[in-house]
Length: 341
Image (cartoon, rainbow, N blue to C red; front, side):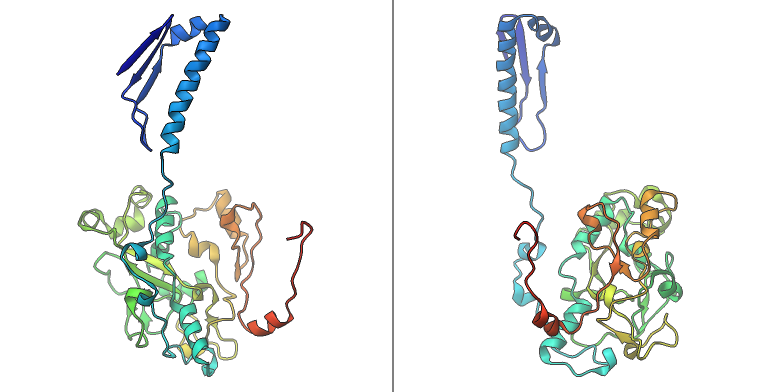
């Protein structure tokens, strides 16, 4: 502790620690400060005191490095070579069985499977929203049964799965796989299937022995004091591929039962006209609040991709179909707005 006394001003700095977290204590004698206020020269002294404190504060915060998110792939020493594209035409029955070029095959595989690492983002969103947005819970049959998923959420069930008949090792009632996925899908890269097209499951690296001891599948579903805890570590992270919002029933060959389609009943690039985006991505929102009303006003088959940008515009639009890209580029023209950009 350092004490400096000058005239009637006493300043104490107790354990001033320059760190990114805490300046433990800075005490200015209030009575002495009040006594200084009537006098100009003492005000100047007080100004110098303030400058000193401000300087200390600047040192504290300018010494803090910006906290960058961890790139887990880089941290593990991985490169692009560790994420090879799938060249096999594993979704051949989709889109009317159309013949595709090798590049188009790899593009469709990526479209339907690749989450690009966003499972980290969606896991953090579940924690930071205190369970308000929770894709893992959305996939659980106790929240939305597989037999009513298309009706309620507009999502497309993956062929080769059935409704969960029992909980898994973590007490979750996720769809049960009864047929293997097409060969050639590396689950370390693309995750494992969830039973809902476009949503992939990845083991959560933060789910260690301590997290496992604290995990309770029943409380995760039913106890708000448990699932609203932003320190809760979930056993899976959920990755979201582009196909989650774009895979839909093929209008040229729709399924007899939309809750149980076959691969040949599905199209990968039309844009899902049935998705209920609000319930999918914010399954715990309760009726009565502003957020609920905003989501409820959104028509089926639309997406508001600017919502997170806080532009304060409620502007959901139809999900674009992805086709004739070369033709679109051919007729496109450069556009300039008023400011010249």
